[in-house]
Image 1 (tube, rainbow, N blue to C red):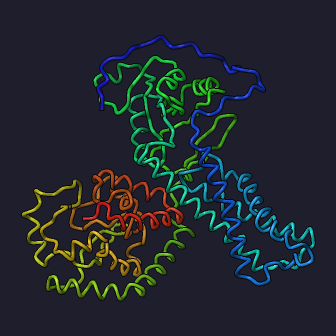
Image 2 (cartoon, rainbow, N blue to C red):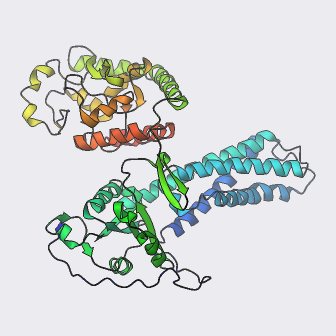
Length: 502
């Protein structure tokens, strides 16, 4: 962190143009940020290889794979299976903007576009077969090849995204170097938001103040702060490739449009960060009215068919989980009884959906006198808020420490999920004896608590209470079935890595 005590104030550089910077047909410079070029090349190879592999597997599995091509040269069949069909996949993926750099590396849009392309490929193959009267095609072979290709492409892109995120976290490359433009509070809020997830690849390198340097004097800032500079010149000076206009800076009449004009042909990207923190993209829609782009924010979906589908997924998943994990439950129960005589399960009142109290099921991990010993450990609490956490809690017996680190102690909560008291994904249920839920915290009670949740996959016990509440509220306001599946997938990696579990 650095103190902002003085600035080298320069008179604003006159704009290089007023909206007609170059010949109408002049070619823009290449973008400053180029990480996406080799990444897209790798995706092209992955997608082509996935489609070709799916064709190969279909040919090996189904004996009638060459039906419809038996009166043609064998080489034509292999040309279609291993060259034309994979190339068709690439063309349709490109047409569905599955290689658009704005959708790569973050969010679900990339995978949605791959799925949409898969439907388009199936429709195209069906139309070509109908138009050429190739009715003898093996439907099982074609179906397997198309579905297999889509699944392999999705899998390949997941692996590529994990590799990209690893490079961004460990090497600090393949990202966007951003200059934040706005007032200091707005820029710092955007800085905090974009740096929470290093895998997103957004790296703020400087702040340009719109309200003058005096607003930041003596305040600690994580990156250098400038004022009274030409923004484009500043971007080039600090090696940036993206300008992020924050909050009220985007509301200045005509300023944003003139900045966009100034950046034409510069290779620098322009993004706008409106004051809609913690609202997910699917809830925000742009609706232009007479040239005015209005951002319409939809209400959270807390009822309807999606919630019914979530409940069905919870009950089915919990039922299957209890059946499959029964032998593991028995082994854990024996280990607990050997470690410390007493009950196998720990039942504690928790606050659930709409404030209803229920008793949560957990494997017991502490000695039977743990509650009596708590009063003597309160001053050693290592977290804030409504929870008590200690990394080396003396009340936890050795087997219980292993159960906590591996999250096996949470598995009996499948019983609560089966009974409808909890969900597989949601805010964690808090103890009922920790006082009333006041203010923003009460909003967590709009949905059923979950076995895992957003703050579990974002740091668990290593997070502060305020950060845990923020993540839980974000989940409540932006949940979806796809988001639940994403959190469940991320939970596997977090559990295996034992992050923040104690």
